[in-house]
Image 1 (cartoon, rainbow over the protein chains, first blue to last red):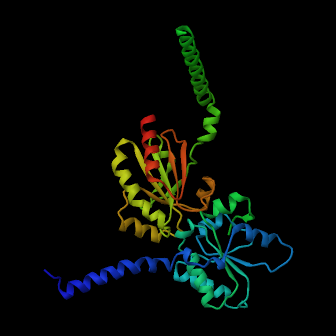
Image 2: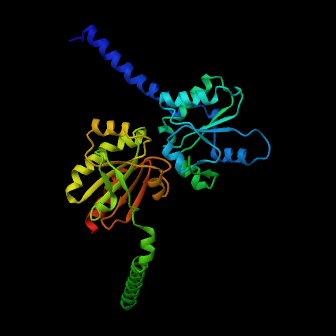
Length: 157
Length: 175
């Protein structure tokens, strides 16, 4: 017995959803950020310690509870960019800056591929026209990949 | 020839016995080392989802899985049903999961708690309790705590639920 046209359409739709769902999920994942837009922690440390060159504006786009415990020295807290209010705060913070400003965004809340904040923050800055934005590549979490390495960190608000 | 073989076997058995004895002493002779390796879990009192204060030391005598998590953390959310299932199976044997949310505000935690009908207590954490546990600077992080209140192990993402269950069962049987 041949399936009806309606049945075939339903199957096709289901297959399309199954194929497209991973792509849609990928759009929000940190792994979708091109490698050329990433900065490794040791590279950022070199930039911060260098006596020459432009110092970046460092923005934490993750949890406040985590920021209060430890953050990169000099970093500003904006809030989780996975929420609309977090993205809005980020937009307001940078709107007056020149579009070639060196900006480093970071989160470190979770393993890189699970971070819900870094990709929306990166996308928002690029949509605003910023051309020198780097996302700090934190593979595991901020504790493991920054604090335990002895890199410059501070506590508090 | 036979005497030589017997003497060799006896000597080998003696050496193996000596090795095992020394190994046992090395493991058990240093309670200070064991204490340093398994410190007491820092106590805290934090509000749970019903508004009551939960005090960790109130669970002394139980094996506790202390889970630092947040609603915005994907791997944390994926663990919740697994921990709930462990709570179901092992709860009667003296096991308790305690979730410590590191969300910035309680509203999403209360929503999540109600929506998924979590069967174990969840409290609102903060930076201070994070620092007590050596800094919770990434999620999820879970601690297995023995009945004596000492930390048996720490697990950082990705968390291996099979390994955690094995450790919990060992703690349940050990004491």
